[in-house]
Image 1 (cartoon, rainbow, N blue to C red):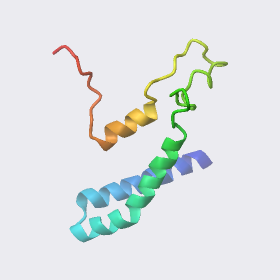
Image 2: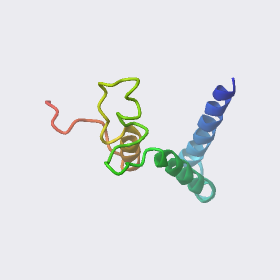
Image 3: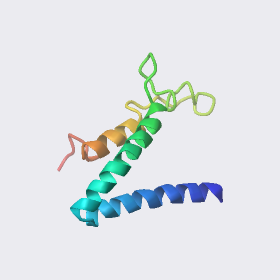
Image 4: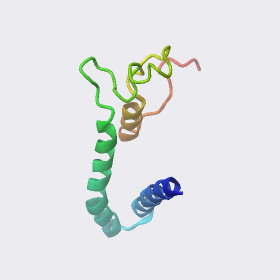
Length: 102
């Protein structure tokens, strides 16, 4: 039950911030930006720190060597999925392949 409450509290906080940003007046948005954006930045940096590339450029959390005992055929993902997801969200990029047939 603890994990469900943990996940729900994070989702509710993000939803509350998103509601103010999308529906609030300029004063509310400014207040939320000043109070919440530093916390959001810290949260993202904390999550990303676990996925910093090591000396050979692999993410230790996603690396083949870390999971070798579990899936020896698994190749390391490059770039690691959390960094790729953060990049796409921060720069409003899509998941569309560059050379897709249309």
